[in-house]
Length: 497
Image (cartoon, rainbow, N blue to C red; front, side, top):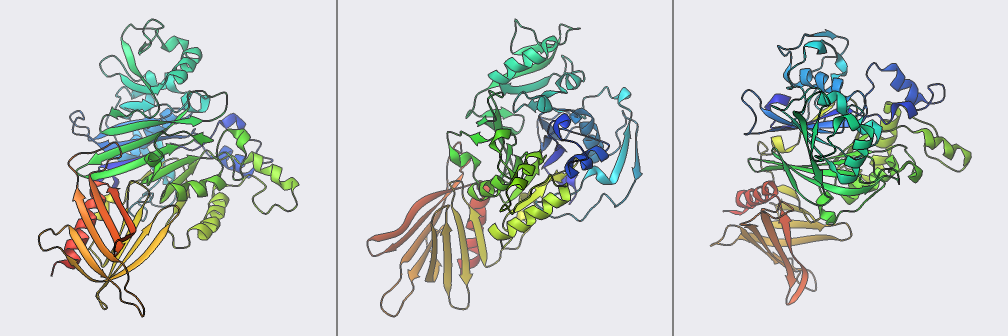
């Protein structure tokens, strides 16, 4: 499966904080590493999704998040990376190392641009095909908005860029780029040379849902320091043919204030911005060390780390008892440190955390799930912070059920599992007989829902574990469409005689 066979993927456009503040290469190995690279790009990513509403000849709707220094040129490199040579640009490539077609695993990076050097004649780049259909801004710090004027130059009134940001962010944009905005019309910006709008501005409110092309986007209020009022992170959902994905764009925050904490639960990909490895709240951002807690709290199986600088970690060198990193690390050293700590919190490899780099492409495991052979066990991640694991014990005619949330874990065993004769979505199982007493019984029903709520619930599973009149566990657990169908298929495949 190649990237262009996927209906949804994410590209990392850049991973750097404010470049002028990365430190001296004489002091910081991270700074030395950055200065040795040819392209220096602030933190940004692009989401590409199949859209039936795309123009003729286009397959993907392109949603860009932030446009700091170097991002516009990175978009051109990304266009060549995804689509190959494009007729309106003079592209040539020179192999400088490993083959760009790397070994590809579902739900993991499937290639980077580091293996190919692209020479691009941007003078002939009059088409907007390489540029986004819409732009999300997280906040108005320069390393997230610096190239907004440069990006706007590639749009006109016949094809305006759709821009989304908070009201506070917009006020700061007006102050930094007064030439871009018409003060009398705050929702439509025009270039100074033309009365035709080059882009349309939409102001967003935290916890509201915005339909942007094929995406459903929810801003979440964030605290990133007292000089960044109106900061948000974005929860982005995409649903195509029953396959639902959730991406959390979580860079540049120290605290989050979602009205519904479940909105951050169980993302397919979490992108976190961290200035340092050790906690330094004075940066206005979480640390890499904090990230380990977030991936467990949100059940984020895959996480990318961006924005790392590491300068403040040198403060810990003054503490002779401190055993963590005390200097800025290279990307490779940071990855090794992360891997060592992940083994402690995720010995079974459940969670993966990667130090991201420009050009990295990600696609979801969802693209491959329907091709999997149904085995004797299934793991379901719910929308309300439950994880269900069901395993059939063929030899002993038993079923094992694990129900786990952030606090509790139930390990349950039942015998004689069987489906209801009249409803194949209901599973019964008897209590296991012990030396002195009989264990609890099980009734589990998979229910397709008639409507889709804001948490994307299209299925539910009613789990009732009881012993006589006493409930051991009883709850309705909400599932996505994919999770509901997988659970239903598992029951039918294993329990219909």
